[in-house]
Amino acid sequence: MADLSSFPITSRWPAKNPDIIQLYSLPTPNGVKISIALEELGLPYEAHRIAFDSNEQKSPEFVSLNPNGRIPAIIDPNGPDGKPIGLFESGAILVYLAEKTGKLIPSDASGRYETLCWVMFQMGGIGPMFGQFGHFFKWAPEKVANNPYPVERYRDESKRLLGVLEARLEGRQWLMGDEYTIADIATFPWIEGARKFYGGAEVLDYKSFPSVMAWVERGLARPAAQRGLEIPKKE
Image (cartoon, rainbow, N blue to C red; front, side, top):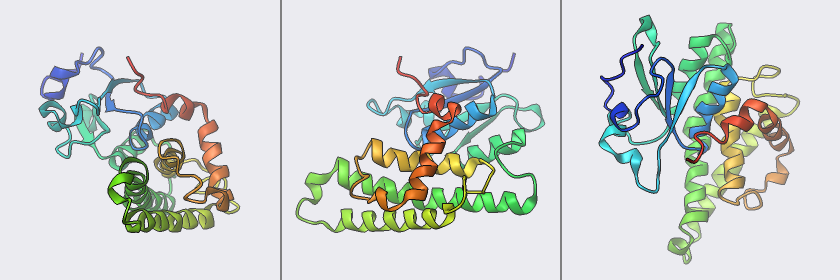
């Protein structure tokens, strides 16, 4: 049985089975990237729910695994050279899981690097811009009631990014063509999240991006995505 005692986070969220991947997360657009990937890959894992309402992501135990205090994070007891490894940042975790299994990423070097470009596009563009849009539009409208600039700025940039995706996806099933990859898993939950959590579909003019929306629906229809979107479950 693996010994995870060197990871302080396990003192607060003990592993029932320390021999499998430990996932620390919440069903947010960032969090579900990893649960969806784990479900797609069929890797055994144990999910621990990190409650935002009590700021558990800022607790010393969680910060010991992710100094940035953000979900998701994982511990893999069977990391490189068979040694446990702790990882944070959803993009890095996706790359790690893909390379660990040889799945969800093209095997050729050119395809691999192109996939990583689209993962970084999500990490540096879609995630931050959609997140800021959602913050001002949904969660802080009273703070910008007399200043439309923040909402307009992030709305317009989010729509620009949707246009980039629309051009990429026209005539394609997935971001890499016929192959479903971590680039899709990184990105479509954010488009769905802006619709589901922020109520932003109309403001972001989703109807003007038919290729994007058809792609999101294909992603949501995958059984692994349907499971992963609900993990970690409420206790």
